[in-house]
Length: 153
Image 1 (cartoon, rainbow, N blue to C red):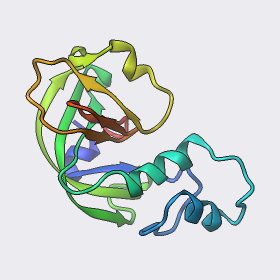
Image 2 (cartoon, one colour):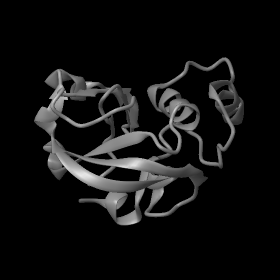
Image 3 (cartoon, rainbow, N blue to C red):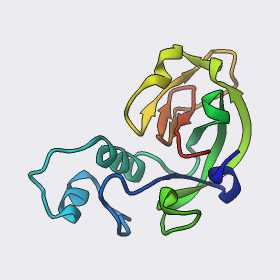
């Protein structure tokens, strides 16, 4: 089920250009870390900013697994961490208690998983037992749904 499950994390890599610890940064701070505040904000940089400022302990998150057929779902269980645990694709991460797998078909509308942003929101079909808004990796924030990402293998 991939490195996210094996290491118990949801994570973003360094596609944002941020290769150092980004704890406490927002989008403005991340742009300053890049040394080019006037530079256009890329999707990976915006995703990292959301990962740092919008996802926290208790949020529900998910990553695509099994070639995108299913979502591994869990609860964020800690603060932002930085480091090479599990390789470069798991550099910016949060600890997660993975607790279930749901089929891709549980996402409504199905087209929501076609989002090109590395972090985005989705909703699960009403029959899924979720109470609160959620966030994911390739990541996603969800309303009665899951945060979804594509870092898992």
